[in-house]
Length: 219
Image (cartoon, rainbow, N blue to C red):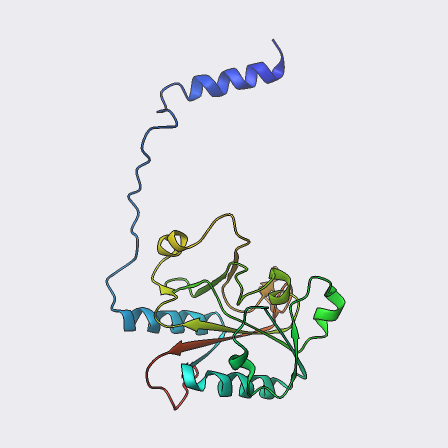
């Protein structure tokens, strides 16, 4: 008997009393923690995003173009890269050169871009996480990993869920999913935090609702 056969035999014996593949899997975990209203869920998202050092802004649909234009100007970005399916109105007030997401763009070229503007697939309140799935308003993963400044637009409340299980129900696992919790960061053994290591140094999240805020709020 070979070593492989011995190992497989031990595995089979250990699994002898385990139900087969068709047995139902008990899923007793909570789908969300606590009961919150829609407004409370959005507030929790904003709090957790800010806790991860993302910059959070709020505006109405009509104010979005002006707000993005201001954020790009404050960053001093002369160039902005955008996905092919991004609404051009979002960049209508940006005084910067806008480049589309192109397959032939090199990492060196993207590294020279001032900002990137995208939408998102879903935002998770309990973890302060933004998920991108490469949709038309999000583009290729690399445009959100190489430039140093990412402006991400989240539609409120339609794209906001409470928990990870609820987010997974909306996502296609066959798509290229990028999960973002704050700007890219890492720490060494002494817990010295360094940002911008393997993604944007600055993440700005714009929560866009149909309602009020003409005095834009930043958390």
